Length: 617
Image (cartoon, rainbow, N blue to C red):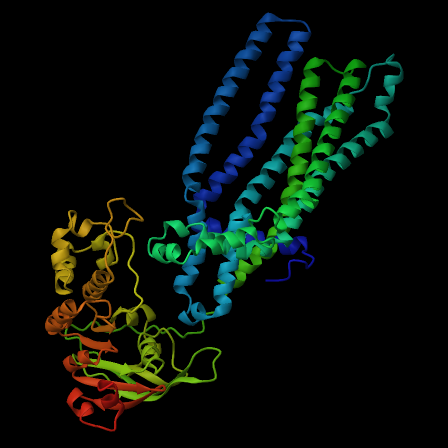
């Protein structure tokens, strides 16, 4: 993002805001259309009421033609009713389309997160950028959230100005009758121009003061990022049952109180924003209110003096005071919204910097053959890998083949390269050197999504959603209920499933339903295994598949090992070497290299090997 202190040209601000409008319209056209339509409608309809009211007042103060007065009242009522009906319709349309607005804007950001290279997600710069974007939105509404409101207000201001001018021009063109004495000066062109200039100057002062105040907020937006992050955590500390024991035993609520008392904190009563509110921002707000009072006084004085001089009647007084006030409000609003458009530009540019992060991973177009015999062969050929920004190899010269339908165990100390090996296999990263082949073809040449579909993975730090059990297993709302139940039973969750009142329709956790059930770590791991089975991919990868299970549950999983895996090619990452007995082959990693490969009996009999050392540790 460009420095917020850089001078922003109108062209730059316009380009940033138009890109945002086009982006939102491409995704949510009715949300944009309904908001714009209502803004235009609300800006024009008040003038209809002003004009009709002025005619009624004029008739009351003039000839009192009863028939004409009744007609004017009936027309006014009919027009008001029609305006109300259209307004209700437009409001409902807008409210329907704008419901979940924050989620819609967040969806734009999350789609980038879901589709960008995994390497970008792991980049610290990307995570910091994303955090700042969200804090800017939460702290001051800056970013995409501001654009639609800004566009609504500017359009409304422009139409308000147009309507105001149509009813106000005659105020300055209507001449004072002869014999008005000193009030005839009101017809003097210099007086008229002077009054217009004074009104315009005062009209512009108030929004300029507002822009000055909002400029303070924009420039200090970064000051509350930490505060908002802390609030996002500490504000819900008491609701998080996963950590409630630690919070109470170690009195971690004291940390929250400490931040609240810190003068640098966003939420401190003596913090930076409190000082801004009492100081510059408070003074600017007071000045803006004073200017508005002065403007109102000048309008009333000029209109009333012309009426006293006989230039127009009481009905016109009503019309001119209302229309000039609306016109002034429209001009003020336009200037304020232009200021917001400029202030919001750097925040939009940060979002575009995030959305424009390039994806460097090559994604081919070859179709992955759908084989009923699951005959897929994967080969690593001299594969080496360095994580982005690192000069150290996490994996070095790894060469091996996966035999179809076999069980492969991957073991080694922490940091030995096991997880990196799996990430490359699943193509979360591409090798720095060498290549990975699927049925003899470089995996980069395949369609990325289709290649990912041949893997089912249970990561050690897997997550389940606070949704229905069956939806968690299937990963979708519509699914094969019998298959989901079968997979849960194979994964050892059958007994608990029978005890659930709503079966696979039971909500996990209480985030989405008060009837949701909390599950243990072991039960969650069984559900994660069932999810991998439901996908029915040719390769199943299990990262510490029994880490959260008790010894009995672990023995149950191993006893049904072949039934669970079936004819799939299975890869296990485990610290529990007892699981290796069930595998056809074992890879031993150390410092990024495969240092041993063989069966359990072969490796454990090698008394000088790493596997023997780990087995007897």
